[in-house]
Length: 69
Image 1 (cartoon, rainbow, N blue to C red):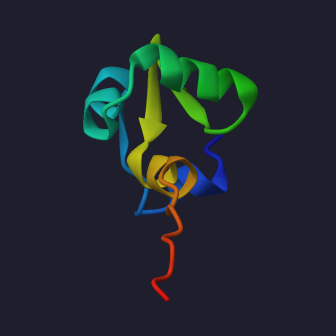
Image 2: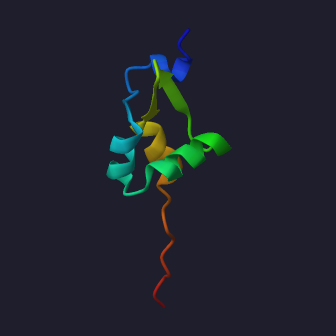
């Protein structure tokens, strides 16, 4: 049975290697984030996929800038 987040049309599941290249991180980093619960991994057969939209929401962080006086 599909989880609600997977069933939506905005879900974009990609292989770990593709996601790692897209975000300039290692596959090992993504596997650690799946293990610690930061992101969700989806098993498709024997392969693991991640949702690029979820990665953008959870991994991309805005860095506050210093205000000029």
